[in-house]
Length: 171
Image 1 (cartoon, rainbow, N blue to C red):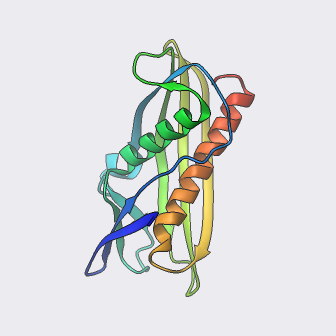
Image 2 (image 1 turned 45 degrees about the vertical axis):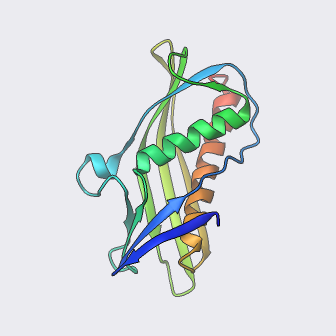
């Protein structure tokens, strides 16, 4: 199952996300995926695995791994799918700050997930591109679809980033 619900304790859900790359961008050359920071966790407002949720919603939602690690791993897999050699020590590096990772039960029938990421591309240590990418996705409300909704928004966010980076010639 693509998005497995690992546990439901009280009003907290833990989601294990098996991310599968899906982008259509083609590239080549080497790139390092640097540090990604989850702003909500680094500011102390959320735990590193905690998805920001509407306080009036169904309860807390956590990933089985840190949000920043999940996102960086998803980017690595998308870059590899695109044809890049991904590993440490490359001239090009992508870093980022996840400024929003928000799940909201909008109404009795819909759930919305929003991810906003500030990406920075560096070439030999110099910033060549800095951009904010946003993806906001909605879906019918079912607990098991939360995982697929999060993965769909992350995939869309990364797809937008790769398309823009290729268009601007920084990847």
